[in-house]
Every structure is written in structure tokens, then in C-alpha cells.
Length: 166
Length: 355
Image (cartoon, rainbow over all chains, first blue to last red; front, top):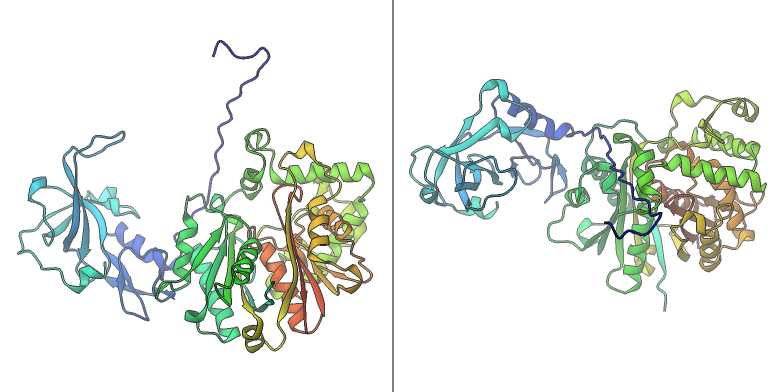
């Protein structure tokens, strides 16, 4: 920067704004459930699909408010997965690890979470898994209340139309 | 050859402050309402266009979620503008002009009270020399008002008169409900109040509210089938002044003047003008730029954006109000206007007419 023109002024002006974020009444029961160790999805009154997580509280297919709470899981089935081998800044989990899409029992869309307590190369589509919750003191309105999912030993489940819809 | 296109239905959500609804939950009921009012099957709609601003939610690409409010199955044709819904209406009008569709739903939402809107809107300013200084949108408007006062093109009394008239009119507009705290004050009483952004007093600044609205556009015979008296778009133009505040005259709105001329605003024949003027002095500048005569033309009978300013929806609200005036028969010809950017940088002007 030594060749800057004479008299040139350089300023740093970081900017930041604070927002009041609202989950909305229709997604709030889902988040409250996670604070109590429960998995609450929402059912569409029009097409009956159960959403977990409930997106913005609206069924995107029907444009209908998702008013009805439905308890789902806690077990689920892996619908697809990827093995992470690449280190990156801020990585919290030791590589290699598995990020998977999990279709919770009773839900119609899958959610993403970590698979732990098994070797990465054992993970497969159709594998049955269960959540491992963090200590109750760490529960909050987030899916991070669940530390990870682990294989629960049940026989694999063939994925049919339920997976196609996720 | 231009196609005849009209606004055939409108819906507006009553203004709120501090809503806990998500943007999607704000939008969904107004889309349902306008679809039901017009009596069209939503699967027949040829194009959907949305106006909103991600800086207001603080989430990149948050506008994508709004598609959930449409019911996008079977797949739809949709678009979004990072701007007021009135600009989305302009895009939809162009889309219909191309012949690709005959109908469109245009909608917008603004959760104006979920963040410091005065700072957020500053990001519309030139990103090199102005925005990094965070002057505040209200402050930029105040600088403009100061220049206008010194140039003698507005007066503090005329500005207060705009506020008194707007507040009075807003009382009979259910969707533009002003907070009760606004009270009922005379011009003299308002002029005795302190400056909040010298030379702007509280009544010169817009009331930030959360809102959403939607309108249906249709072409030709489809419009005649859907509405007993469509509000036909007879002229439409969008002009932009330079983003360099120091490189243009702030005591007039040149882009509004050109847009008004190209849109064919004939001041003698305009019954109602809904002008998107968030600040009192800006209404005075717009009336001047469009050549309107307040004795002939009713200015902002809805109360305007001054008393209810859902950012990114306040411009489309002007179009909804102007169209309602035509469809109801209160006006044969109306002007709808939307501004964007600091100090009336962008101006969109539309002339609506009943048959």
C-alpha cells in the first residue's frame, strides 16, 4: 500500500443491524417441542402431508396454514447421505463423518442431521436410526438439541413412495 | 402493439406494528383474498411476481420462501424483484405485454418493524460514498427537505398541511390505520412540535408498519370477464435519477417529471392521485413534478404512505388504492406512483382509467 496516491484517505466502516426475528405462530410449537425433547411436525389440512421441520408454517404445495401438531419419530430412516472427508474452517466434528437426510417415522419430508456411533462406511440408504439428545440443560429451540442420530439395530427399511415425496 | 391490461382486483392487509407472523404468513391471506375476490382459479394465473427486500428480514434469499404462500403445485411461472411490489407489477405488466400470459398476481410484503428500517433503507444509497457512512434514510430525506425549504419550493406549513390531511383521510381507511397515538392536531399544533430530524418533525416522517398486499392483472377480455369495471393501465413509465446525491437537484424530482410525461399524466383529467411519498415534502415535490393541481385532483385520499408505510409494499398499496378508486367509480382516471431509493431517486408512474 506504499504506492498510494498522496492524500488518499482510506476508511473502514463495518456495518451491522439487529433484527427481531419471529418464527411465526405456526412453527413455534415445533421449536417449543425441541426445547422439551419432543419432535413436533405439522400436518397440512389439505393434502395431509406431515412436515418436519414445518418450513414457514405453510404447506408449499397447497398454500395452506399448517395448524395441526403431529408428534413424529423419534426413529427414522436414512434416505440419502454424504461422507464428509474435507476439513474446513469451523468444522466441529472429526472427519470422516456422515451428514444424512433422515425421514422420521410419521413425517413426509426428510431432515438433515449427523450420523455418529458407527463407521462412516457402514452407513447406507434404508438404515434405521434414532436420535441421541444432548444433556437436557443444553436443549433449546433448535435441532441442535439433538447431538446426532445413531443406528438403532432395526432391520433396514425399504423406501417406497414416502421417500419419493421427500 | 401494446396490449390493454387492467388491475381487476386488490387485497390489502391491515397495518400492524411488531407482527409475530412470518413473511409467508403475512402474504398467504392476501393472496387467498384477492384470488377469491376476483373469482379466478389460482391454477389459471399465468404469472406471479413478488416484491420484497431481503435486507429487511436480514436473511439472504428469504424471498424464496414466499413461493410457499402461492401453492406452487403444479409448477408455476414466478419472479421476484428486490424492490417495492409496484416494480413487480411493472414486471408483470411487461410479461403480459410479451403475450406469454393473460393474467398475473402481484404481491408484496414488508415487515418494516422487525429491524431498524431507517438504517436498513440506507443500503439503497450509493454503496461507495454514502451507504458506508450510515446517514439514515430519514436523515437523507431531512437534508433534501432542508434544501427544498432554502430554495423556497416547500414550506414547513405546507408540509404540516400534508400531514393533517393525510391523517384525517387515513381515519376512514381501515387498512391504513394510523396508531391512535397520532392524535388529531391542527397545522399550528404540529408546527409547535420539536424537530426529530431537523427540519423534519415527527409528522413529516412515515409511520413504519408491517403489511402485505396483492393485486390481480389481466389483459383485454379476460379483464372484462373478471371485473365489472377494470382499472385499465393507460400509461406506465419508470425513470431513475443518478445515485450520486450531489450530482442531481434534490429540490425537484426530474425522474418523476419525465415518468409522468411519458406515462401521459394529463393533470386536467386526473381525479385521484395516489403518490408514494413517505415524507411530507416529497408529496409536494411529486405534485409539482407531475403537474397536478390539488384543487382538481384528490391527492392521497387513502392517507398515503405517510400514515402507513410498510416498506416494499407501500408503493403497491398506492396502485391498489388508485385501482379501487377507479373500479368503485370514485374516479374515472387515477395516477398510481411508487418511489424507491433515497430522496425520490426512482419513480414509477402509472395512469389508470375506467371505461
